[in-house]
Amino acid sequence: MIVPLMDQILMALGMGILGAVIFAGIGLISGSDETTTLAPLTLLVVLLGVPAPGVLTFFLAGAVAKHMTHAVPTALLGIPGDTMATPLMREANFLRNLGVPHIALRKMISGAVIAALIAVPMAVLFALMLAPFGDMIKQAAPWVFLLAAVAIAWFSKGRLAAVLTLIPFVMIIVGLQTMTAQFGVKLSVSYFLGIAIGPLIAALFSLLAPAERETMRRQQVRTFSLSPDVKSWGGFFPNPLKVLDSKQSLWTAITAVISSATFVFSPVAMTVIMGELVGSRVKHVYHRLTTVITARNGVTESTYLAEALIPLIAFGLPLSPVAAGPAAPLFNAPPRFSVDATTGEVNNLHSLLSTWEFFGYGLLAVVVAILIAYPFTMNYAHRAASYVSRKISHEAVISTFVGLILVIGIWEGGLLGLLVIVTIGLLGGFLSRFLGFNIGVQFMGYYTAVLSVPALVALMNA
Amino acid sequence: MKSELFEVWGDTVDGRHLLYSIGIGAAVSLGAFFIAQHLLVGWVDSAQMARAYAMLVGIVGCLAGGAISALLFKPKRHVIEHLADPALRAKILIELQNEYGPLGSLADLPPATIAELREMDLYELFADYEKGLGAPAKSPAATATVGVGAVSGNGGQS
Image (cartoon, rainbow over all chains, first blue to last red; front, side, top):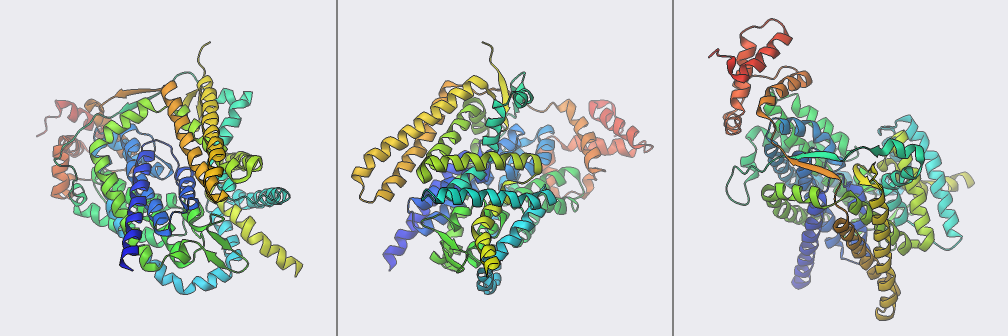
């Protein structure tokens, strides 16, 4: 009994290290969206048959590491590292202009360390409080998803437009599924990837349209000013509690606890709101900038961890924006993981791991990510930012993602898989750009199509 | 032919280079996937596992395609090493005031933050700003101007 457990822990540790290293690297590339990168790679890990603890540590360590290294382009180059970094831009730019970007960077990642460590036990605690309602919610899954889709759409940028757009969007998915079923092809990953990568597909199509191409044309390359390296501390692994003052640590802890509980809200919105909450309580402007940026980056960690862990532990259903998006493969990755709406039967990490395993492996993942990403960012931020901005062209990034679309599409469903990715990607990309029908709402649209629509049809026939 | 620059997916690319990169990415990733699938179906017992491994090789192919494109095509970015100009810092304070309202007083700060400000050479900036506020408290516009003057060294109210 002891030996297999040791094997499991070592394997989970290995997958955690792998996730942390890969996503610490991806975090350095500005604009590398979480869903676009975390979802496909986690899916790959699931489908390759990695045992459940390893899948969990890979995802969590990846998310935690990415939300530390995303501070590098955000603080040093003035461009958001990813979607979650956008609410940090205002404070980061002021600190950069004051000539102290390295302070912004260190405060951000130290806040991330504290919040990530707090979020795991908090998420488990809240999940235990919600678990008694789990069976009830599973029974009502099709309707819960329908309600969640409408709610998430309403709180997106598109408001009523997004709610109404759900109807044609769901129709298209149902139609595509019926069409591929005639050829005996059942797809799911292709829909995920199409939704996640939609903005790129929409941009590439726009480039082919003469009128759109003119608006995308640029006369000169963009100029980035990289802040010089300043190292004002000794050693390799500074204590995050010494980088922050007591007030900053306290606010980071408070916002981490609050944002762990509010797992159904958009993580970007929580980051903004928590920042405002802290900002209104700090008087001096310098102290406010550093405290807000610390707490906000802490929230990017805690809200991600809680939004993935709480639905996993309590329901096994992807009932949060993170669970429906970047963490989707932890819930649903056919043929290995599945959610059956009609019976409420769940076969995924929820059924494979106990609450204590979630707690233990969750903490393991967070500690691994901290041990890798924190000293890396503290010591090599400047060199890393310089290398990425000077050596890795945007063409190369796009080339990698185009390869990903082709391989995953053809692997899952041959030509049909590829066509579904392009169709959903183009549609979703434009709906997101013009109507604010964002990626999270699109994922909920997918779940509505596969979970709620069959139940609706059954209800109408009854 | 002159290079054509476009902004695609958040950054600037050269149209021709983008076209080549997509071609390279497609060829290398799909090539890796199909070759791996062809070879592995014979070797690995389960056809499903063979396809999963082929996908993994295909993903490595995506990265290889990206690496080739990165070697062939340089980034369309102009990166300059640049420290924010100290003379402009005073201007930033005015921007901060416009954004957040009153900047607050140094007296409210805990000792750790004061030490941090001194270490960053920012303490004087904020201190001078406060003095500038104290002397002629007439209109907000006037105080802001005095704030700038104080920093550039002609305040002399100490």
